[in-house]
Length: 107
Image (cartoon, rainbow, N blue to C red):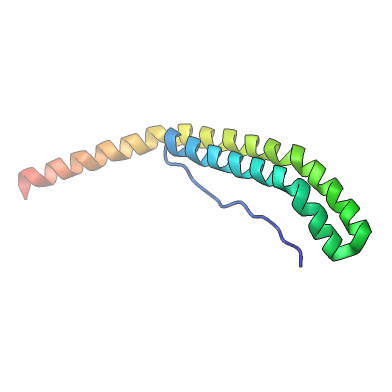
């Protein structure tokens, strides 16, 4: 049984949530990169004996490098999305506040 990790699609509404999602993803990817050095050879050995273990060592070593890189890219992406969405979120909040004030005067 092959296990794959899928990233959740997150849409940060502002810079703070973008930074939070980015740091969260980065830390998870770093964790999986480090633990993969041990878990990948074990998975490989269970699936394919010695050859599987050797493949697992290769996957673990590659993951040690590439997973933190992927986490860094995701962190930059989420933070940028959040910064980009901040003005719209602020404008929507102001509009919502104005609508509530207007209803209070007439209702």
